[in-house]
Image 1 (cartoon, rainbow, N blue to C red):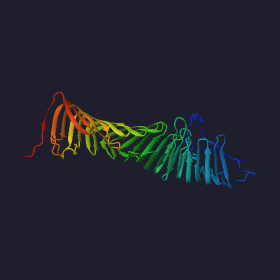
Image 2 (tube, rainbow, N blue to C red):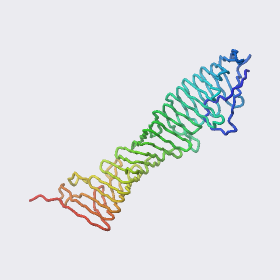
Image 3 (cartoon, rainbow, N blue to C red):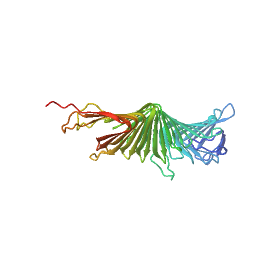
Image 4 (cartoon, one colour):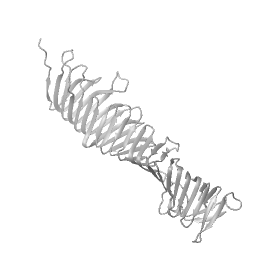
Length: 429
């Protein structure tokens, strides 16, 4: 059995942080299948320095003495003066914490770095799998306490996160021009990043994922798409994603947040989405440029907007500080090209599901404006014939508009009340 000393352990993709006292500095490399009884052949070539280059063929098995790892290949070449070990053909590295396969590997002994090329497949200790054309592994040796794997050439990472019970979850898929893993939990991706998980697709120039704290950050033209039954797209300068027990719970976009769905467009400096049971539960929007929400029949502007959901349906919308809201009047009962509007310090709109609608459409139930409130509402005239509206303009400290099935019934004003009612001009008989 041939035995020689290398200055570093060849742990190809062990991305597991070790305590300082457990980090091996050197690898006493053994070749157990060489020698008179082994099938492997070895040729030595003496060089001017007095060292000997080694050429190993017919199957290579190498082990770091006492470290529980092994390296297999069809052949190998070792050049001690350059501190290089070349491994060729069906190369496979294995240790308890990681496995890597490739067509070729080069071990740079002085750098404690292993470079793998050709059909690289690295399986990490948490079950995650990296595939790509090439990868560099920097093993954990003092003063580097955490191993690093750098994959280039647009690799694919199947990031497997496990729940508290240890059972496997549907993986998060990461594609990028370059992917770097640090230890078992940290992932850095750069260059045309695509990140997908059940019901979610994300893109950005770069991304960071910490699977231990369940946090992800998208930087540079980030975009997040929800692909479930009520799809939406969120963009911004930076988008942060927060999960708990492997379930997405919060998505924060800032600055220049922009949310777009089939029935809502929301623009604000910051947009904060809260998610429960894979459904949107609450939505916050705020910032110096003010929040602006727009739907087919309603528009809201305010310093901040807070939306509450009830499952898939809109429950309540709160607009705070210099709030303004307009809406389309009931054009089934009147003729008008204008919109109703309301403004106040705070506006709270409450909604109910339309009883005759099967698509979870909501209609206003009550709108309350508080603090220097003003409202302009259009109501059907006394005639039963559809025509010009009666205009109702009022001012007060509090204004409440009540609706039935989305139709305005009554406007009530409290404290410092005032206003006018303008009837439409009746045609001459």
